[in-house]
Image (tube, rainbow, N blue to C red; front, side):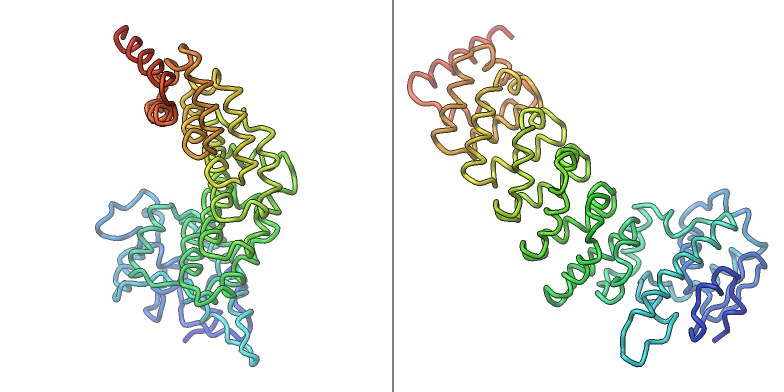
Length: 379
């Protein structure tokens, strides 16, 4: 092993005094000893980008002379991509606590980003979704241990590779208590995480793998501000978190959210992402909530039926509402021939028309079919 003196300045500062470091690499000076250099974080990403199967980018010209070839020579065996490797950067305390390795992991990530940025090389945070997925396949699908991510969950959740590691840890946790430990580090960050293209997947994984009562903090943080609830329902990523909450949690748990959403249900029903939230409310909401939403649909059929998103909400009301409410919505559409034709012509109207005809009976159903045939003959 080598001492921190062989590391670049930023990396040496990141290592604790009693750290045991088994790597030695100086990108700036072109010195790449064979002792474990291929296992450090910058070298592993360089190896990934310098793979002979992939055309090297223009940035490779700025590497020291011969550095690329020496890196490739160190690539046997193929390096794995495990966050747990960073636990060797620090010696566990006598109490057996892993807090020191976690701190070393965070310092190492920071130092790596600084040193790579100073040399013009890609940092850990710059790894794309595709590279993170490739890295996952390189590691052979090995499951991340919960201890490997504890203490830095929120920090690594903001990046493509980090979010995959946290999700793996949630899936591979041995008990509910370990999942709770991971989710606890997301407290106070839900409003940001649910809008992050990477961290929102961790919130979804928590909701789907943990007991509903243990993810109550997610619903509570969203419901703290009314404006945040509406924004979440209309957001590309946050709407997914809201939908999973509506599916998994009891109506009492998400009552604060549904109360706000009900006020803006007519606008959400015609929104690209909000319409999916309204559909989940119609399917998994309480009986009172579904009745109120059905009446909203009944009042706004002239607006919803011609709309591509609104027609999906009409179909959900005809499918999931109570029998009496379904009949009222169906009659509200069938008694207005123009609205019926607009629904049939809408982008997603075919499915809604099928549900409508299933609800209607007798002469009302025959009149609706005749109106649709007349419209088809005109076309």
